[in-house]
Amino acid sequence: ESWSLIIEDAGGKIVRTIGNKVSLPENVTFKSFFKQLFTPKQGVDIPAAVTWNGAMDNGETAPDGTYQYYFTATDDNGNVGSTDKYEVVIDTSAPQVTVGQPADRIFGEGAKSEFNIKQSGSKEDEWVGSFKAADGSIVRRYVWKNAEPLNFSWNGTNDSGAPVADGVYSYEIKAADRAGNVSPDASIANIIFSAEKPATNISIDGSRYFSPKSESKLSSVTFNITIPVPAAGSGNKLTSWSVVIVDAGGKVYRTYDSSSFEVPPRTIVFDGTDLNGSVLG
Image 1 (spheres, rainbow, N blue to C red):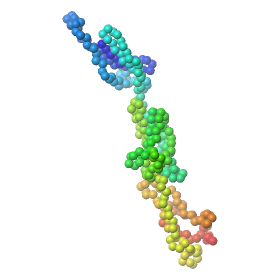
Image 2 (image 1 turned 90 degrees about the horizontal axis):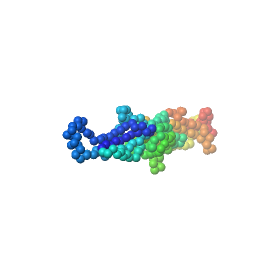
Image 3 (image 1 turned 90 degrees about the vertical axis):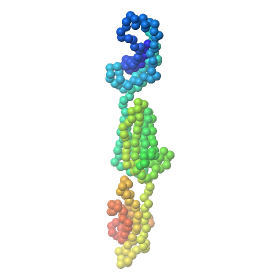
Image 4 (image 1 turned 180 degrees about the vertical axis):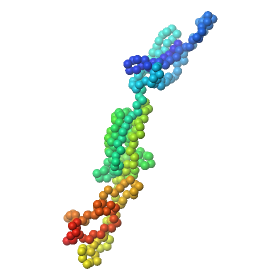
């Protein structure tokens, strides 16, 4: 005769009833009454699926939480049958995450061999953090299951443990909960990995013999130096460089570095004097 889908909140209170029953004529005459007595009874078709959109009987949307649902059916004799109760969860809150935006995004060598990610967020079934190359391909993935996203450091290797190529990368983290809510965009762009050491070179232009502070034509020595400077559009930059004059024991007598020249010169002329201007013996 009828069926119902009944939904209860965590306290057992019915918040929504969805159902159907056999419709009877509103105006019953003496003739139609006896006709119904001899007309075969018709059952109610139970649909293969019933949808609940989260609305309660009062028209309001049910708040986030755990609910129970079950079906009941009533026959012509008033017998009522019901299923077991099953659980359903309403979750309208999207996963939350915050990713710090570092000022320095260049790493790869020496004291800057790792790139630090600082992030925080809600506890979810799964968070996935991905480093991507400039073409969008994923080179490294990090996964946190049944947890909040954690801080970590990337050393510039891919999922196989091999170093990635020098270049520009990005980082993003995402999560989707069981209700289909997706986390907001959270990413870091323009991460520059530069692990290839600059191909420096130094050579003497001419004779390596010279006579400092004298009338000799060879009163100085000229060094040809090669110190690569990253292209302006690469995002990378040369932070320091130096050319040092030392004796056989390693004692420093003269230094040319970024404090003297912002851009490394192609040649350096050494006149044979130390930092104080004294001629080396």
